View 1 (cartoon, rainbow, N blue to C red):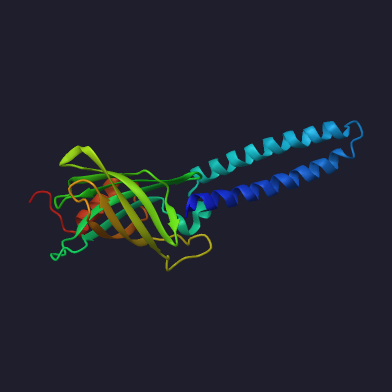
View 2: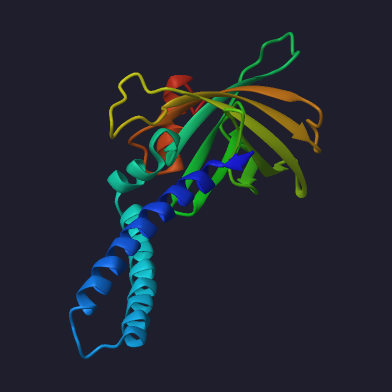
Length: 229
């Protein structure tokens, strides 16, 4: 098993190392034509420039990915999740089929993915809070993340959950837009009032949402919620 971050960061490092090697070889070739530099000095210059080039390229990629959605999508590609999602779920084995809902926020940069979210009650009040405590791990094409949770009824008690996600391919995918906009998941609860239960989740990305409030308003419209009633 590995985090899908590690495979991307390794690939990025390989690309940067190839670029640095090319720079080093070109510089070494150039210095060999400059007679005032002996072999030892030339080697020192090449090593120094290689270190500086590597650090500069990492910094350049970090700035580009963190400040431009195009580069962020290009970096994460089919695992680009950055943004706001709403989810609905039922409890496995619950004959009533009652549906619950909430909001997740994915934050991604060059170094990883962070998830924060909260479950909502029927009157759209916060029922549970969630923060990821691991990176997302690729376990045979099932992408797993472990989260720390609290319940509104007992906010001082913390417990854990594990969500196993199956991403749906974007039907309008292209070279620069292959990321999922929906995924299904199973969440297992460890501790708290729901300990031992499994949630059958369905997530939908809200592409243009800029805050949790935007998603909350969308959910209220979807469920025809009237705050005055």
